[in-house]
Length: 310
Length: 310
Image (cartoon, rainbow over all chains, first blue to last red; front, side, top):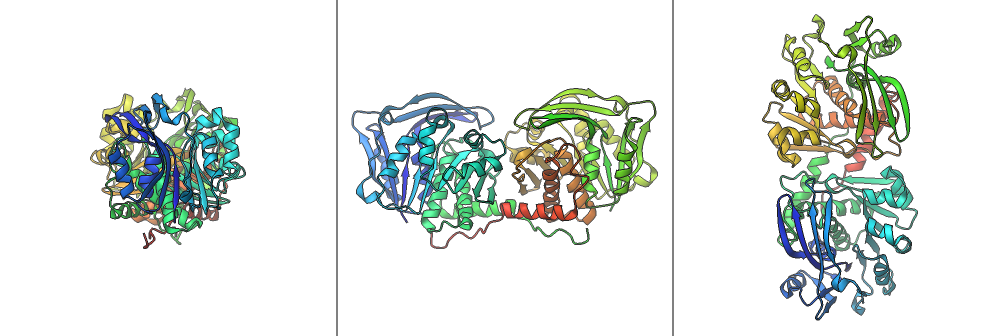
């Protein structure tokens, strides 16, 4: 099934305790699309870049089955640029530079071939831009997922609440879940957020894994303990892209399949963070992902039968 | 099999965002022993209190099968007292008062009936005191576990390293694992720590679960998402007590059984933190623990077979 992906395609400069990478390829939609491309070759990308964005990078995505008809290339303008430096804990980070450039007046226009996409992944963007994408759909998708962040809760809460009403699945991190719900317990927060529109909620906890909620059902996937985490940038988008790619590729939105989907997302994210940027995402084999999924299984699987002698 | 438990039996005053409890029963050995008592009734407790400690609390432990022959009751002296206040995140806490009292010159003396205990759980104490307990053992135990904290790494590292050499299983939290190993990656930290003596390592991550390492094998148990966490005090000791109680009760130190043991420990810890102090630990039924273990299973269990069509 087709997957519509919306978000930034950009340059990032990233510094972590393990090194610095300057003006590498980044952006939520880049990570989402590369991750999803392991599970489906019908990806409809919607984004905007300047004429400074390397054609070779676009060609590489096209070869993976990413349809770029919805990518606007603004002549004479520059692509979105973000620079950040991670704290030693590799979790918190400071944003040093945000040059919106082409993103400042981004108006997503869906080619007509996109408007009946089956699955929708709205990457983190202004809630109004996310809503504009939904406005252009001509048929009801099987699943609409949206990623957002605390910044929009701070400055555009009404717009965010309005677009959240229209979606099926929300992905946010633990602090954002607490902010959005006003509840400290993630269980209470989840139940409150699921009354705001989305029937399914994914709470991302970074190096501590992710929780999947749907009604009274809960599933947890840990993050895989890794020898080296070089760059956490894009881990959340890779997770979301892997999850939605798997759902679109299997065309099955049951809770059981969503479990597999977030394990696949976590497997991809665990590969992604081992190198800077999209380095690993561009070169994985499907067997690498299967092997990681098996590692997740081994990590959490146990025999629940307590000894009868007790 | 018999389980020797060593640590503090004390009074705590605890304040969290959900309330304040004054001079309630606390101490590592209290939590360890209550938790272990769900799985074995051969618990040999070693600790010290003053004459201010309520006899009814000791009677309640004795009824659960806790042998108190190794509990020193110092006439005219006061029990160890700790007062702390948790931050709103319920993870970090400030210690407001530490009155060592009887603990200041605690010399653990093992009754002769204790010296051939099968399983040993050394709760957090001065490393020298922990070593003194091991010195008195007359037969080699099946498993020696030790819990410690960053404080001893700061002020008594040599003593700590000396006692760690003599044990089989170490429990510490993630920050302590990083401090002890000098490695940020918990995987690298674990491998380094397992060269210091213990063949098995448990890294506790509080509300983010716990990791079990043995050689190249890894197992992860999450913390159960809860509606209400009222008081995290003693969660780590409850976890350790449940784990060691299960191992002693089943007399099986295989990695597969250790998985079940830390799930049992987590199940008990999840019950413990829902109320202040040992309130819940004193009144659980075994069926409550089984039900929690089933919840853990449901939380992480997934079908690893990825769709063949991909």
